[in-house]
Image (cartoon, rainbow, N blue to C red; front, side, top):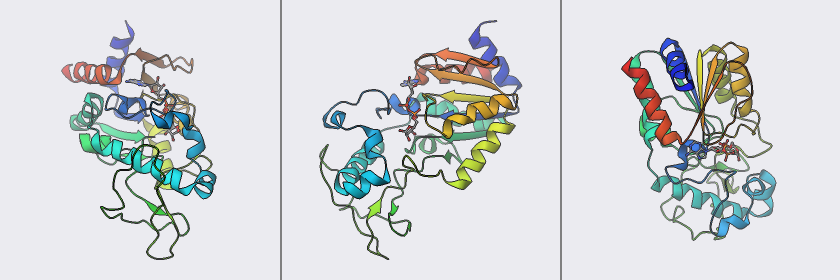
Length: 253
Ligand code: APR
């Protein structure tokens, strides 16, 4: 049996399918991934150096401008056929959990519900000092020029600077999200792992947890990202093409 046929068989037999996504699933919606080269002005900045509390303390205008720019990119983007196909999995009467490392809302806009956001969201700013969630005005949301330095707005309660509601390097994942993700990893029969380089911990442990609990992992990626365990299937190609094809064939049986 070829890999695609094995993947379809595993999906058809599964009672619980967990979907684990990374930046690669949103690449075909026009959102740059983290470890592929950025173009434009931001190519001079290393995202890993902007995505820390230390960077925000030292260069709040640079970091706020970077996230406003990314927020705008996300709002202009549309879900692609991979996001849409994943949302269809929920319609076939089996348990389905979508876990994402992405801070965009493209799974939700495609129709997936109860999406577990391991790394928070670009769309929910909060106070750096008191952590209170905050709303931004239209004026504060104005699209900055790429690379612009923008002073972060202030918290209405404590006057601390607002920061994006995302998880930065060195910060803990939201406890509820991590618990839901590990429970899904341990209880799924198949984990569909799409468009992630699998290098950022602790999220990258989820496929290991699923494998250890006996699940099959189906990777979809432009490159081979196997962990070289027996129950792994690797589908190499673009998520926007492979994922809808896989789900169509699964549902046709
Ligand atoms: N289809 C399938 N896979 C793709 C596509 C595509 N169209 N485009 C890129 N990829 C793959 C790349 O081959 C790579 O393996 O997506 C992966 C993207 O990897 P990263 O850029 O490392 O993104 P991700 O794994 O989500 O990063 C994890 O790192 O910086 C942090 O918090 C950030 O959530 C992010 C985390």
